[in-house]
Length: 199
Ligand SMILES: [Zn+2]
Image (cartoon, rainbow, N blue to C red; front, side, top):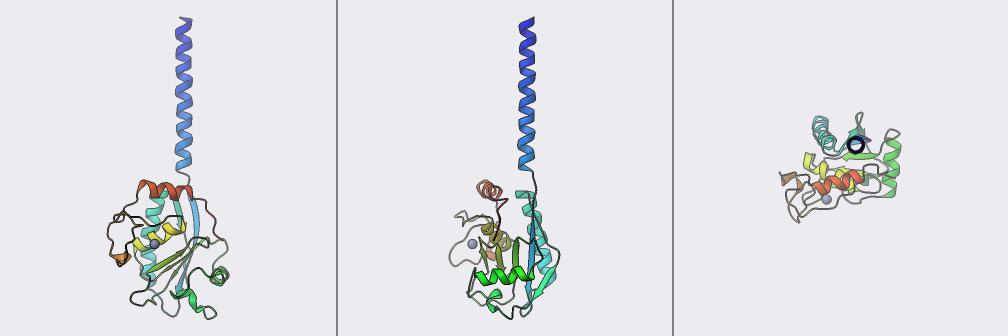
């Protein structure tokens, strides 16, 4: 009888320990990482703010659900980079001065910076991302494209899976991809980089 009670006690302790461990796992996985986003619109070649707002709302909802990252922004800042025209052009990417100028314009605490510009020439890139500074440039607002560039900022590379939102094949514009699957591997990498800090 004593042995039976002992066994029941051991089983109860194990069940309790397992339940606690599981709760801890679930808690860790569902922790929300809030990332403040600064959104700039090219004053010379602006993109319709309704389109920017709608695109970002869709993108941010998807990231919240898939990765537990909550992107937040206050309002779109119309910006005319007179001192640094490269800010809204595809000529140069990831310049140190660009980062400095954006920081001066963006609200304090902004982490990811998304720049929109309607200035785009046929054959040029539709979007770019700087992994270190968290600066993203978008020339054709589209959910897949913004997801893709945010993916780069959160540490993802290109995918050979044509259904993935990180797919990239020479000659095919990103906005032509309609399948935007998130693979388990991509979600895993993003979650690992969830607390990344940009310069
Ligand atoms: Zn890419």
